[in-house]
Image (cartoon, rainbow, N blue to C red):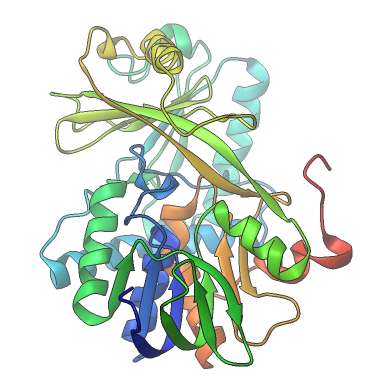
Length: 386
């Protein structure tokens, strides 16, 4: 921020990824004066990826976390359509559906049970979304029949979005209605003074509340502020191939990978997950591995042009679920991180719940207990290798 600049806001947000921008959007719509401080550029962290898979939890062992995500996936389409209308930008959203291969009789029996449970959990009579087991050879024009000797699951709740288009639309909305500053790294918070501390200590920024939403780097700042380390980064890698002619196909999840066709004539493949890493750059060997593995179960990808590969560090809480809410020991300092692989599907609902907590009011859907700070800190804290 400019030297000597003094500004006051109701809510300041550290981080312009999917959580930070979604929270900013919700705060703006709630009538708050908002500033977003991004250490680098919009989407420069793991939110700026390529895959865009919006996949539901299995309809088994149902719990509040799964219900929260289910409701988020149900409401996301209306949310993004409104954002598109407000900004004039497409976010690349489509309810594409998903294929899962069945490779053993045990998996077949397991998913037959899940298909029955989906009738209770997904309410297909009301939502129209189904989870069905289909026989061997089904949809073999897309998923190789050899990869699914006992049939497939085909479910219609899964969707996809273009991560970068979604971030572009959100950032356009925020820039129009609030303040978004790139190259402004938040390093601390003087709660008594309501002062956000920035790496450029010549700047002054006053706020009623600060929300830390800077992805995996948030864990270090949270540790500095609370003395507790509750998460880590994991490196993920993905890529984009030429996908001409594949636009209408569903996503596939097979061999630990997603193949996700997008409506711009590309197909995304990913992602890897590495706990140990030395940089954030794509590794050529990893990209070759992704292509080889994906082509093995999806022959239509053979000899497709590699357009771009990507790598980023995703935030993962030690207790796996996201961390959303007020930091222990503070009244006006909040955190939203740890979405790992499900952030894009739940960010708008996370934002609604967090802003309701901060300004007072009721959320459309309450946060599950396992998302809240009490689950992650103090006696409930889980160490990295726990």
